[in-house]
Length: 193
Length: 193
Image 1: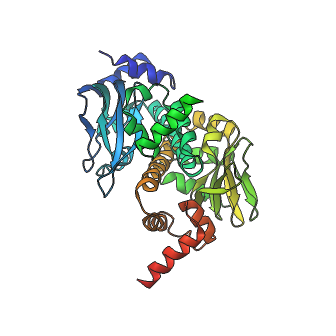
Image 2 (image 1 turned 90 degrees about the vertical axis):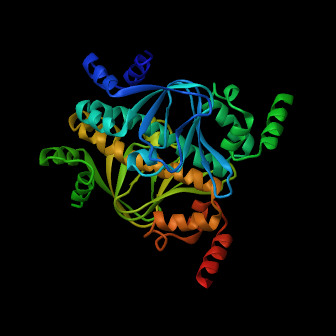
Image 3 (image 1 turned 30 degrees about the vertical axis):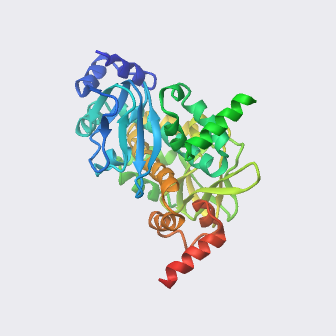
């Protein structure tokens, strides 16, 4: 059982008694996914908040021309899902797909509502988690407006320090909103310097 | 006193007893700002979460070339500030400036930490508020990647339905990441159709 990882992660932000931890675990399931399997599919309601115990995932959007745009990556100790779909329980705009075999700790929407009642401290936990996610999203909006691709790539490497080796370059390029040829050019220029 | 507006707004999301409401109000101040006055200045720590009782504000970023990029607008019943600066208590990257005379209900960082202890329901309130803000920010990232400027403008009008008449067009253009000439073109094409 790799569940304790989730509790350790929560205890970085809030104190949980053993009883409270047991309540959280009683409403959490672990599930294994194979590489390429989908955790969330566009059009389905996102039913779970997913915490990554092991593996690497991408969340992405397909535009009207069928082109894929990577919105975020997730690795161990990150949360993933389509939060917009989850909180409104309406069809997801995003897809979440495994880039490696993954093990996720998942909390179902209705179980989470119960958990908020039974362990109100979780309100604080998720407030802190989502606060950080919001700040990161806002930074990315600013960077997309203001930074050249090379600097956005440096920021990406800082934010996702251990991810670059684990994901194909064309997905990094998609995340940065540039072609993979342009990313290759940036990388080779950086190596030459 | 226009304070009750803040409590009404909180009660849309959480139940507050009159005693809890009084505690919130005891740690909240109202402050008037003149048009063009700054609520947050780049480089200063953002000390307050600000709730708009009346008026209209922009938050914006100045890039290395001195160009302004509008990150968000705020009107009545919206929150504003530089959340990244506020939660880490480090210097702000953003500026928040009044586009009209404004009245804000402000909660100081240290008062808010006390409020979280005294009225733990506020954890839930701010979780819900920030969750919505995160989803909106993520939508904007996707739109900037995938939608042509005309569609981004339509989305802006939907999200900020009553703001367009209150702010200069060049700021709307800045928010959309386009020139004001291009925005004029989009608008005149829409009127002609």
